[in-house]
Amino acid sequence: MASGYESDFVMIKLSACIEMIFTEVPFLERIAKVSEIGIPAFEFWDWGSKDIGEIKRRKEKYGLATATFGVDLRASIVEQGSAGKFLKAFKDSIKVAHELDCKTLIVTTGNELKGVPRSKQHENIVECLKGAAETAEKEKVTLVLEPLNTLVDHKGYYLNSSSEGFEIIKEVGSPNVKLLY
Image (tube, rainbow, N blue to C red):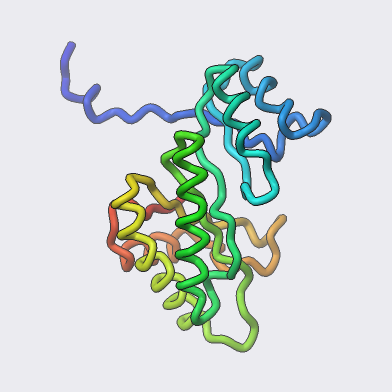
């Protein structure tokens, strides 16, 4: 039976984004709803306005994992000179990740800047992520860059293709910076 295939197989890990489901109940009550439907983990967007202590209490009560959440951005990473602000936001988000026993953090690029060449915005993203890579490695977290659909619900967002996303990840060159795909 041991064909070697089993060791190469990666099982998809399910998580429910509680920002988008069970919206008929308050945010914190959605954690229980995830447990009720048998999904082992949940995720959410930014943490800055959330009661992290209560999220932790409820995740432990229901035996759930926090799969991921978004870095609390204070600056768009397409902007020149945003690397310092991004690194500070990333480090603050890591503290919350450790509190929630979360190993993956999502980063979004922000909207495309009019009047600034895409190539320059691309460089700025790479600079921000390279600046965070060493911290991610040291803190044993993974930072995932998220492309979004600009045709349907994220008009103006910079990173709208997986191909450019993979280019950015390759340029960053860290095992702890990946593409959310």
